[in-house]
Picture 1 (cartoon, rainbow over the protein chains, first blue to last red):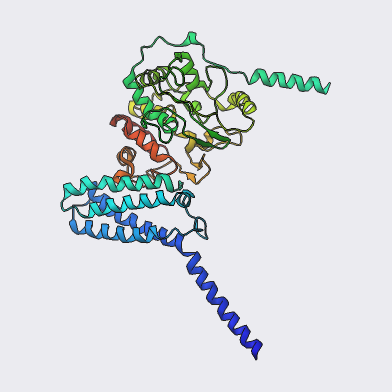
Picture 2: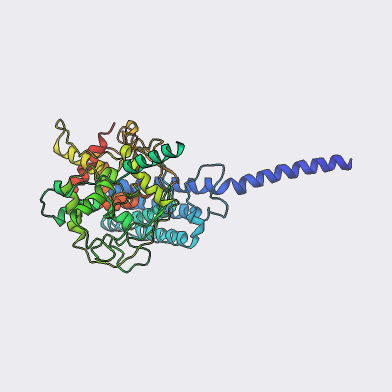
Length: 149
Length: 291
């Protein structure tokens, strides 16, 4: 009886451990990739305005920049030690962990630029503030993202 | 007997691996045009590798010394400013042309083809001389760069002379008379000074450019990630049309064009953004028609 109970407990414990491990260790790469994908979508809406393919719309700018800031928050928190490789292919360069301060600074620059873009109130302001966002994207991708092919 | 064969083999190897420079006698009389040289300097991407070392006072000058990771070891690209002692100040025109187009130093050793002389070999020699004229207008910077960190450096360098028999095609660029001027301009810029194929065309097992897979992409030369294919960029939906591609090359991620800033392409795009609009449009026209 005791043994049987032990077996049951062990089984439940093992399942719980596997589930926990799946959440803890398969998580960050998927989280940050989902965040960047959502960011790309928001950027798409902004770039359409920038290129004149869509009319300037303050509401779209607000939704998009809100979404980018929220995604970015998740993104920057999804690089725990050891998540340089995982079950999913990742393009994160080892420099993220060897130069975590530089990476965080690049992230802060991007967040600052997005906030400045969100604070614009007309089309001219929007167009003037956008390059800083793109420049922050480029700066960080250059240093910390592997080429994707 | 075995010794004789080995000695004979080594002798032949020594002869075949000798430098084959361009003779000063064939250089055209040419008045260097620094403005055209600056344009060629930007499309050739000289600065990307020869940029100033970390912390150097004049960060925008090509004074060299920043480590460059290559498959065979660390290189420290040299100083291109016209400093007499540590730069190109005393280099003659023919020395410069042989370095850029044949991968030969003035003292007769082979340069590692991280310097893309395999592409620069197709350039018009006048354009090469113009780059020299442009470099001569820069402020001289005294910058001594560390020696390359390559195992068996002497044998690797001398052996490159043998590799050049198969790896270095010195044929000049020939315009396609069936195509218009801007397409041809684009083809020249992409394939000669722009040296796009050095990364975007994969290599054979002999590390020579695999022309049967021209611009099809491949492994990244620094060993991380992949270099994308440049074939059928429009058909595959990467860009809407040639104009969209031109705007991507001009603005990159500043206008939200993703994928143009990883693996060194960010630096390439920064260089390209400095080109006149008609050159960027010509490059885009040529690339957009690569099926």
